[in-house]
Length: 597
Image (cartoon, rainbow, N blue to C red):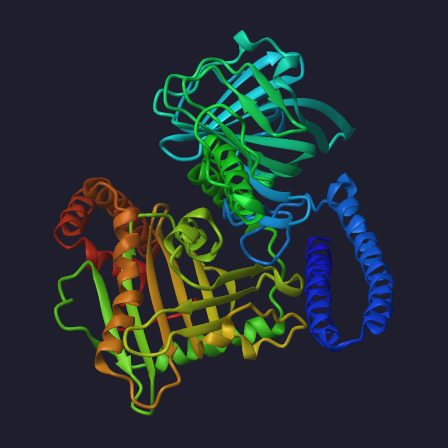
């Protein structure tokens, strides 16, 4: 719906430009006309212009009705990637300005609020007595709320709004929003602005609509559509409570020593105080969008709990996502098997200086071209299922924050009903053209005879995917294509420890790959293991105790009888002396070789 509205708006603006260009050209031709020819041409042009403008105005009226009609608003959550799915994804606050109509200054935004719908609604309509630098809110009278929030350190924006709540169904709340004149309320009920404020922006809403819908993980979809007008007040002294407010004239008078307001569109200035710079229509558009973004952003910041939402989503994936995952397709099974075979025969050299590192690191450079293989093997102080979840979920708030400087990063989950993921991401490289990777990922869970789990994540160039889905992203043509493939193997050692093997190839599609580029890629890929190892690091004595218990259990299974007391002491002593080797002995793996379950 939103895309259709944007297309109509662009078409409308383009036709206006063409009409203007045609008028200019025909005016130049008429310079050589006789008086009679000029009169005839003028009459014809008037008729043509009237017809064209009538058609354009009719189309614009239709567009405005669609923008203002609640049913015409796409109130579904807007994920960071193009996939519009039930599970809410990351919201890029300030970039969700989906619609802006330059004729009536209608704006539309959709963000995700990290709070339950009813709690957020109560806060939206109620007092927020704590004054901070983000948003201040106060009930003036029934259904009338005063909002004030900081646009900059010295500029605030205040709104006086009447808000009426409607409940069309149990899963949707509609709030009608409209600006109120200050004469309609008691001036003494309005608070003074913050002491640092020197400018106050008045945001005026007409036909505003807020639509709230519940989302997973205790979140709320917040959709706000309104016609917006902007006015600005300067202040050279302490500002007393506002004394008048007019929505129709966009003029504000306050009890100040020097204050004035300029209509954002007409530039008309009141007689009090100095004259402000005439903003003009373009200035209003910029300010309206900026302030509307900040208003939405202020609500987001007030309820921001990204780490909590990430934790809820990971817990839900472990509890429901993994047990109820779609069966692997034949193509997914073949992909995992093929990549595991490639990993088995891969030969890589240990990177110098990493012998005593907590993460074993290996590198192999393809002599044929720009393909480079990297491998890390690390013991992690975290449950295998937790580490797998951390690696698999690519669109958490934490992952988006990690890649906030990445030019292109889009994620589509459960493509074509499978458990596969389509990923498109760019990579900036020093000294060479930036690359873009289009990748297909899937995963498999294995259960060993000893009851320990192993998770495998396989990734491959998307050209190997044979399904119907294949997305494209805007701006990809500016990057050079590259490919990547590999596996993550997360093998359970004990209940709260695991071994993680990561093998991945990056092919930059370049005949001669400079050494510094190889080092850059290796640092990016191999350094991830150290970061996650540090993130999940626990007390060493606690981990050793778990290792002792696990080793004793392994020996019991192999012997078929319980260990004697002195044997238990020996194993405990050995575990403390060389816990790393014993972990591998218990897991049945060696660092120089990868095995699949």
